[in-house]
Structure formats: structure tokens, C-alpha cells
Image (cartoon, rainbow, N blue to C red; front, side, top):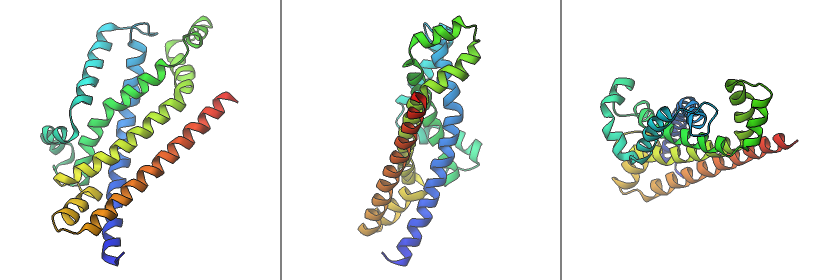
Length: 220
């Protein structure tokens, strides 16, 4: 690998990690409470509210059904409002976050729904408030599943970040398009693919390990 290619890949990797890190943090920040609200307001939930649940569930379904490349174009005005521009790594974080929040919300909701109703009923019988049940029962019990779901989110964001490069989002995807495709440099294309594959493997391994540790701690 030439020094120029190595420098190019390092810069692209740094930009991609920045996009992934920022968008993951934002999507977790908003997606986690969204998932909790969906779970507790669902039919049979501890704070059942059919109107709120139906509204949020519809919003989440709509958000998850829009293809990412269309979403990026559709929210360009919103991206400009938030980031001040519609191109570059900072701009790409906006659609990446918007696309991931509904996914995280549904992942958290699903993880919380898998908890045995008997555990929740026991907490209610002991006089625990809904907030205490969420904080001390639901989230700790569902933590391994939530971590697994968040790992899938990060991996999806890696793919989306590469797609963002197609319209000036920066990162490894931008390098693959500008150099590998437009300038007919197959070595650059191959190198970016290898780096992206290694990133996915690394995040999957780390997520599986962390999920396994929390699952083990819960049993001990």
C-alpha cells in the first residue's frame, strides 16, 4: 500500500468513525427514551396510553420505512438548518441520526417487551413506582438485548455512512466513490471495502462481548 493511499484511508477512517460515533450517540440519546415510552404506553404496559403509543408507533414505522438515500435528500433543508451545510461529515450526521433514532426506539421497545411479566408484577406488588420499575427492573433486565440491538444499529450506520459518501458526506464512502469509482482506481475501492468489513467485524465482536458480559453478570 502506497503512503498516499494509506494517508487517504486514515483520513477517511477518521471521518467515518467521527460520523458513526456522533450519530450513534445522538440516536441512543433520543432512541432509548423513545423505546421506553413505546414499551410502557403499549397495550398492557405499566403506563398504558393507546393514543400516545399509536402516534409514536406510526411515527417510528414511517421513519424506518424511508430508504436512507431518499431520507438524506428529503431532509436537506433540515440538515442545513442544523449543520449549516448539506455536505461534509457534520452534515451527514444529521440524516444518519434521524434514520437511526426510530430503529433504536423499536429495538429498545422489543427488548423491554421480552421481560417476563411476573418480574414486573412482583415489582408492582412491592409498591414500586413506574419510574422505579423502568430504572431498576426493565432496563437492567433488558440490558443484554439492548446492547445487541444497539450493536446492530452501529453496524447499520457504518453502511449508511458509506452511502452518505455518494452525495458528499465524506468518509470512506466518499473516497470509494471519488477515487475508486470515478477515477478508476480499483485498489482504493478494494482497500475501502476491506476497512469497512474490518470495522463491522470489530464492532460486532465488541458488542457481542459486552452483551455476553452483562448477561453473565445478570445471572450471577
